[in-house]
Amino acid sequence: MAPYQIPVYFHPNQLLFHPKKDWDQKGLLEHPEVPERAESILKVLKTAPDDFLIHKPARVPLTAIQQVHRLGMLQLYQTASKLSKDQPFYPTHFPKVHQRKADPNNIHHAGFYCIDTSTPLYKKTWTSASWSAASAYEAARSLISGENRLTYGLCRPPGHHADHKYFGGFCYINNAAVAAQALGEKGTVAILDIDYHHGDGTQSIFYYDNKVLYVSVHADPVDEYPYYSGHALEQGLEVGAGYTLNIPLPKGTNGSAYLAAIKEQVLPKLLQFEPTYLIISAGMDIYSHDPVGTFKLEVEDFFKTGETIGSLNIPTVVVQEGGYCVHDLGSCVQSLLYGLRSGMQLK
Picture 1 (cartoon, rainbow, N blue to C red):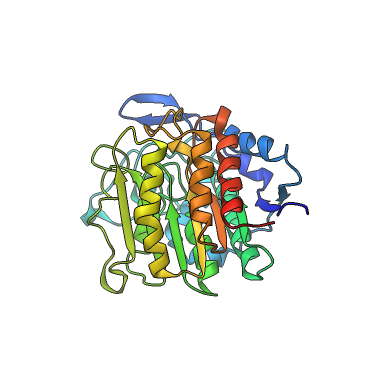
Picture 2: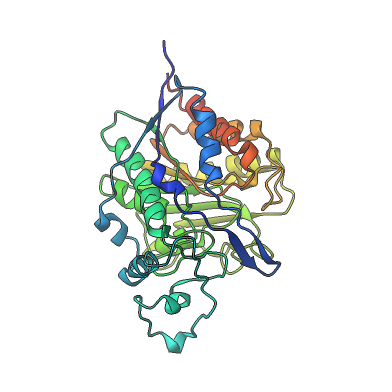
């Protein structure tokens, strides 16, 4: 019997956006969120055509993005589309709370909508980010019919740092949130974020929501981006109280310690919530050779992690987030997907 062929959603326009420099406290560095990230993943997946079927998504309805993000931020992306080719605009001026009066048609007001200086705007930002959202949206919707139980949105640029009205952390549209809104029309949704960095944007979007459970396993924000969120005491508010679970782990966490956190803390929370659908915000920057993170997971640890999560047998969409070791990125993604397929016993 042929193996279950995992649907993969990706559009070539996601490669058009190419930030050149990352401007942070270390100075002006080569930007790690490059098109080669997606190309690395595609190259590996294409070597196994019996296991992966690659689709071009249809354009995501604007209304699906507007369910997640405020109009002003989306208008700003349209303003950026008027920049000349390869001309970056870095938000560098960030207004105080009492100064909140911004014009999204003025590119110099970009700091009103942004949380850092590492997420520049370019002419093709909206083009690539909206197609990235389309990949997540189509991957999610393909679960609804029941024909597929495991799908993959090869989302690039990533999304989990973008919230209702702010972008940052290399993220412009919250792809996981777009997927969650689509699936939420048919049932309850759990988002499991395994990126090295806490998904502050996703948490913020669903912090007052009891229909979406947000669970994140990440580096301790005491000294890792995004610094201001991801602490264990953050558990949701109002009707959303108890529907956020943060599991910060120390620097140098290896595969066995990471898997223990999944088994001992994540799985019981998911079993308690009993979601109709699961979204995995899959950051590969927990890999041992990633230039951004400090965790020590090896390629085989992604399989073990996926197999453990897959054993819950919940219809699952994997949404690509971070991961900046371009050389091994595709192997890490493939290992995770194979692990999930094994754990779900998909034939």
